[in-house]
Image 1 (cartoon, rainbow, N blue to C red):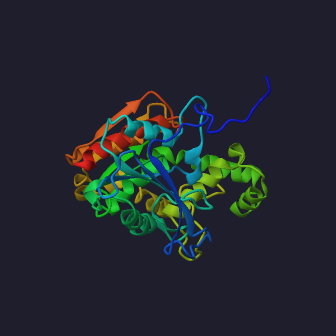
Image 2: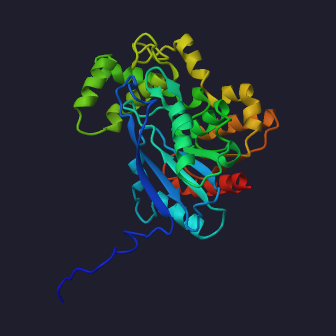
Image 3: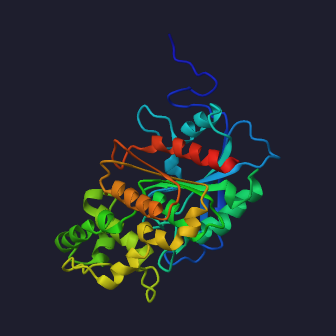
Amino acid sequence: MALREVEGPPGAPWDRRLRGRLHTLTVESGLLAGNPLGDPARRPLYVYVPPGVNASGEYATVYVIQGFTGQLDMWLNRFAFEPTMFERLDELFAAGDCPPAIVVFVDAWTSYGGSQFINSDSTGRYMDYLCDEVVPFVDGRFPTAASRDHRGITGKSSGGYGAMVVPMLRPDVFGGLASHAGDALFECCYAADFRAVARQLRDDFEGSYDVFFERFAASDRLDFERFGKPFEVYGYAACYSPDEENPGKALLPFDIRTGRLDDEVWRRWLAWDPVRMAPGHGEALASMRRIYLDAGRSDEWYLDLGAQAFSKELDNQGIEHTLELFEGTHVGIQYRYPGAIADLTKALAS
């Protein structure tokens, strides 16, 4: 029998037709123009609209933000024997288990790996981009209930960090949050890497971040074993402790020659720790219509402890929330997103 061409998509597992619609848009940001790293002001923006959404209706909105090194088109990736993120969402809403909601996927990539979704003199105004540009744009183009009480944010890892911090700082924009293993309790999730980075810079990069970035730029792939930790730590430093005198550069919270902690710079990092921020932002957190926290019990960065520490701060203030520790690590937990999005949607839709 001869091979023949047929019409239409191949079907599962290669292609599952969405019952809703995914809008893949390109936007131009005024706030990101001229950022210190020269990163693009033109960005992709994905908006998923579930089946049955009425163009004249007003629906809750959930914003999904990514982890460190994430860029938007990664949401299209398929892992073996798993649906994509958009297929998971489509199944959630098509099943009718929660009210329909507009789900927005935001890109905040930088050439240092990420923005932590905060404003920085070294990376750019990414929190303002999200809150003051993307949100009004979506509200103007899609049938949303344009109110913080009907708007939530969720993410994992650095995205989970942003999902905790942005609503604390901008409760006028977001009224609910869900964090999957968000960066928190910095002495547990970050500090242990400082000594390893100091040693790796000494042994492999002549004790110099300048040499590191030269060799990183010349590499034809991201060899995480070789480049991962120094790149990650510098990326976080660019967000938490930017060098105001040298835009685009960062101050490190440790001496790269010895690994000794720099107390002054480390205090700047700790001021951005969600666990330490929570007591000063109790009113904003108490105003959330839903706070959802989870993490794997074997998270490699000990973000399960960070989630517990953040939860304890919420408990101390009598703020209602849920925390679930599940059997798992930091990776392979994309399946957790739909449940959190459903929780947020139920809370924000009413």
